[in-house]
Figure 1 (cartoon, one colour):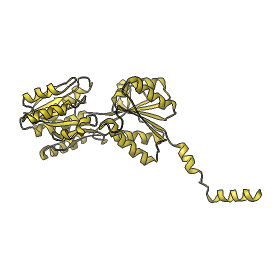
Figure 2: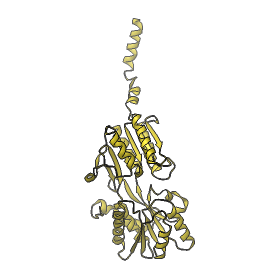
Figure 3: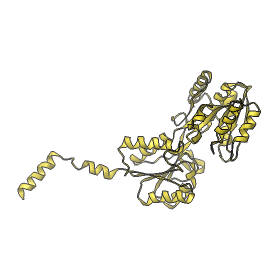
Figure 4: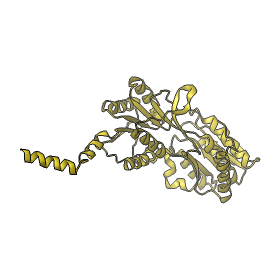
Length: 335
């Protein structure tokens, strides 16, 4: 017996940290994700977030046991159920992907005030225990205006907005400001489609518009309309918004796309994981007057940018100069 005890003590002295991996595993954070409809492979919010999830898991050595991924059917009741399932399963942070989780996160954060939640792509949840990872469209819209103006041959550009978006008017005003800063004589025509963009795009084409900034994402009628017009020899260039516009990933979209405002959902997710692993929460001022906290992404923190694809070189240079001027605070966008 004494001999066995001696051997045990000898081994313990030689390998004092033999139990460290097990202890580390037990101390790992547990993070739950609820994707919007479709999940991975949706070419939209979920795919963009998944890039960040995979990068964060690799960075922090997290396994599938540490990070649980669920997909909603799209019904509010289902969103709430899946969020609540993760709360009851003792996940330290529950993240909803996309603005459609506003209602679910509002309800669950009130029901479970001691738990921590986050929503990526929204500034619509007024709760201290919800980190709203929001993306401003003011800078991106301003830059899109510059790109549109300098790629228009007819001197007429269009804006497609969504009247249900509370920031739609702000995006339009910044787009108009960007257009005027690049070419004062270029005219802006704005439309707010409802269930389909076909009639509105046809209307814009009839007015001579040859570049459209689409801040409207309900369906792929944007691309089908542009395709139909192209066959009628009325080609219109497109500036879009990613990741929400899933239709920008199609081959047909590449025929018209000259650039897009990019919102870094992957970066927001990595930031949330980084904070959670450090046992912290992200509660910066997003809209303090309305009780919204989290983080607002823009050019300065690399969360928002205008990516040029097939835009002409003059517009690329002008956009680059405008970015630098915004960062230097020599250009003030409308907030």
